[in-house]
Amino acid sequence: MSSPTREDPVAAALSEVVGGPAGDHARPHRWWTPVRVLLAVFTVVFAVGLVQKYPCGETDWSSETVRYGKMCYSDVPYLYTDRGFAERRWPYDGSFGRYPVMEYPVLISYLAWGASKITGLMPSGPSQAVREATPVARLWGLPGMTREVNTYFLVTAVLLFVCGIGAVLFLAGASPGRPWDAMAFALSPVLLLSSLVNWDLLAVLFTAGALWAWARGRPVLAGVMVGLGTAAKLYPMFLLGAFLVDVLWTGRGERSRRTDLWMRAVAGGVVAWVVVNLPALLTGASAWKVFWSFNSSRGADLGSLWLVLDQLGVHSSAHRINLVSGLLFAVACAAILVLGLSAPRRPRVAQVAFLVVAAFLLVNKVYSPQYVLWLLPLAVLARPRWRDLLIWQACEVAYYAAVWLYLGGWLAPSSGTNPTAYQLAIVVRVLGELYLVALVVRDLWYGEVLDVESADLDGVEGGGREPHPDVDLVADRGHLGA
Image 1: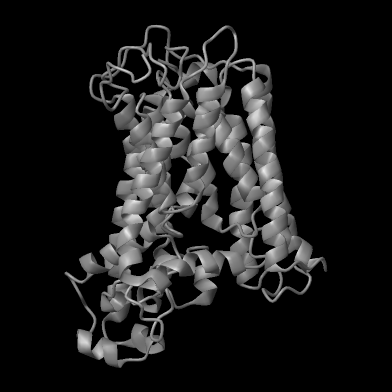
Image 2 (image 1 turned 90 degrees about the horizontal axis):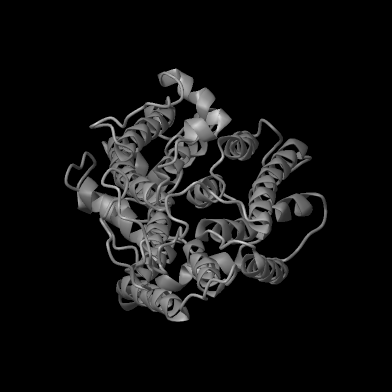
């Protein structure tokens, strides 16, 4: 098993808080196994992140000065009254006249609706009849509704906490012999700040699950995880490209992997995505299509280089941005494919997936503060070096602070008159991502090897090691490709 405090100078320095690096004669604790330590750390970090939202909840989420000045903003409470969840409405019932349609993929809509049903078990607001008779803009002001909004936020936080716990468990077993790599996820500053801004931890759960399943030689399950993740956010489908590189790579005399394993993953992903989308399609096809039309018609938006260009006078229509960003992303994917297949050692799935998702975010027309969570589980496995991860996250934290100060009007009016500081923050974020991208590309090009118990990180081909009871979640003794 790897020992980060011996391998990583930053990890060694941080370990001084709990007694310093492991010694030569150190023995594992009988109860505090790596997985349990990771879960405990994540729980503390998530709890601190919840406390960070306290100023907004204390002021009923109504103070613009607080939500931007204290940087405690979250989409969750506002959509409770603005998307019909306060009336327990199914997000695909076609209520276009009264409420805007939920503009998220189906699994996030289902989760938000499910949280509203749980909240309905302990309501503090008025009766359903009163809610239905009240204009949407005035729902929040009804007696007891602010307390109910806070209840909904806490219910959602609990559900997202469960998603985060699952992600930590999966990441702990995604690189055999290296459970401690997941500590960079559990102890992440950007996780603390961004985990409750939106529902993105749901997609993170399935992304981590897909990495774990592929590493354990379960391509169908990996595909199902990708399909479920894509039904929450689109980016998990990019993992299929990383799986493809994994099965096509040949080198050092190794035989090529079986492409039928990749086809099983694709089939599992398609079936899972269709199954979870069916309830929305069957009950409100028009509402289901809104997510796709909304993203297609969206112009240059917060956090993107497109917004910087737009504010500097280089204006582009939504159609042009879609075309150019799509072309740039396609070129980047082709380059990553060539890099992966020509690497001197088999690329780790997380390395290829990180490069693809990073390329997508770099050319995308929006970068919401919580999008950093898309990269986080991939980054901690692709480049498990604390110094580099912290440098990248420092850039992300700088952007996180800047976007709220910008929206609050402290950097510059959010209407956009000379927002130079915010533009610089966007550039800093991009440079931070490019820094980590460059390191991962270098690792692939020179074939950096991690200290693992098995030379085959992904396990799909067979020959995997005997599972460690304190590290692996499931004792896998057989592998599909053997």
